[in-house]
Length: 232
Image (cartoon, rainbow, N blue to C red; front, side, top):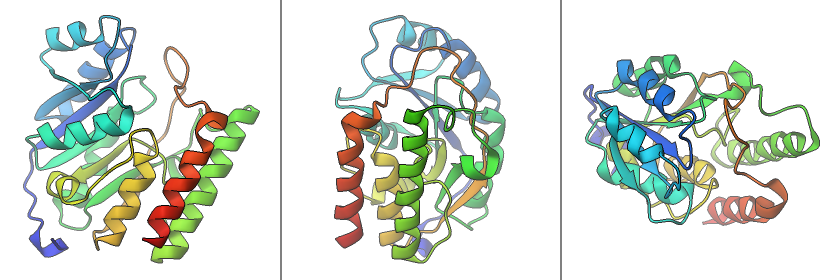
């Protein structure tokens, strides 16, 4: 499949990625409703009332396969009925008002994947302690490697807030089960000749709970994902 095969109209599916987000899921669903023709909640087997609340608000709720966020990302690509699929987290760190700017390049036929860049839009989550410093430094190294490999000028390879043509999402074969799927998606789109761009998107501090990424436990997985996709 090449870029000429991707014909996009205007229906937008928004997939809210969740796991034990009952404190914020109502606000997250209500926030995306003005911008979504279809609201999906892809749940990582929450043990709280996340799914119940989402269903009461009219969202279509699906369970992932229990292997992590990457697994849920693939699930969203399988079930979405829209022409463009937007991924957004349920912790209110992303602003749904950025969705129109994110989907616009795809609807205009100018891009196939659009990432919300925190380096362009600012972040309340990437700085402030050693763990966040390691995350931001690692993200920069990975993004720089992608830029040199495919001669692009991206700034953020890790933000999960992004929009992709649903046809493209189904055309690439994603294998990562955890958050590494973010960088894998970009690399496989570039490898297949699809167009990847960015728009500014501010990342806010989580409204509840803590990040599910424990940097030191998964750093090697980010490195391995990068290496194997750079050389394939």
